[in-house]
Amino acid sequence: MTTRFRARQAWTIASVEMRRAFFSKRAFWVYLLALFPSVIFIGHGLEMKVRQDRFDSRGVVAPAALDAIKPGMTDKEVVAQLGKPQEDYEFTRRRRDDPDEETEQARSGKRVVVETVTRHRRLMYWDGSRRADLRFENGMLKDSRLRQMMDFREDRSIFAFVFQFFYLRLAIFFGCLGIFMNLFRGEMLDKTLHFWFLAPARREVLLAGKYLAGLVASSVIFTGGALLCFFAVLWPHSAVEVQAYWQGPGLEHALRYALAAAMGCVGYGSVFLAAGLLLRNPIIPAAVLLAWEGINGFLPDILQQLSVLYYLQSMCPVPAPFDSDTPALLKLILAPAAPASVWVSVLGLLAVTALVLWAAAQAVKKLEINYSTE
Image 1 (spheres, rainbow, N blue to C red):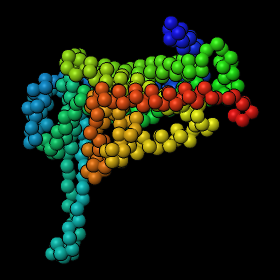
Image 2: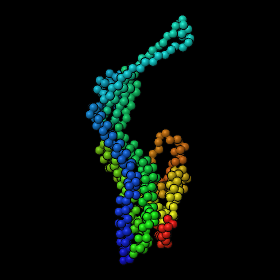
Image 3: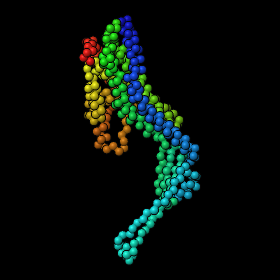
């Protein structure tokens, strides 16, 4: 009965705090952090849709006919086979070459200038998903480039990079810093914490209620932001590709990204809540933690496992991609340690969170309010 009563007290406190966490002016920049990548991906998708519609309106060639184009064909043969191009750009380039000194002397001292004229032509065709840029010199095909308008696999890799390097390392970190640090430290600065201490509730119940409010707010904002970004990556692509993805690993990927975002709020939230209680200036430990998480990829395997980021990355369905131009040595240095299983990562973070909240509960019991020192 006592446990149920305290749980109801904690939920009442959480309900009050959630309104502040969701709608306070301090939460505005948290929404910006969570939604910023979605805006970029939605804008990219709209641009691709507009370009695709414009290309479709100008005419579409058969993919098989486009694949049949080979170097050495003339521009007239290509036009006869594919029809009128969407873009046709032609120009002439003239180059003057002076003969060497020995040749000039051989020609009785008369200066002879050799002029080379090259006719260039560039054609562009569209087969519904690929753009073909064909380059001709003097009527002969010298180079053809086929580019996919939207690469489904590449876009998913870009999202994996954005999620692991923006959401996990920056957005969730600083979002939790702003939300959880203000639960106690913000009220000390506003000189309103004593009202909570006068309420007929144990201090550890107050701590649980505030933590629950911060956890619900941060999880909804950042999990929702990550999933919105995930769907923004998918929607511009063809229905066939998206359906095949959902029938394959799509649902698992979405759930694991959501789990990683939520567990990031669980882990970082408890640390920043405790820092706001235990330290007068919690920005310093936050900076130290940010630096530790930032150099995570450079550390030996055993030290990587002492960070929150290692377990969050282990929950992600695919590793963050490296750029093809990244030096091999740097790839070796930045390579993350072998990931833990999802369940080990979740249980590990929950255990650390429980330990940190226990330490925070001991601190809040002994907390004495002295606004003059804040």
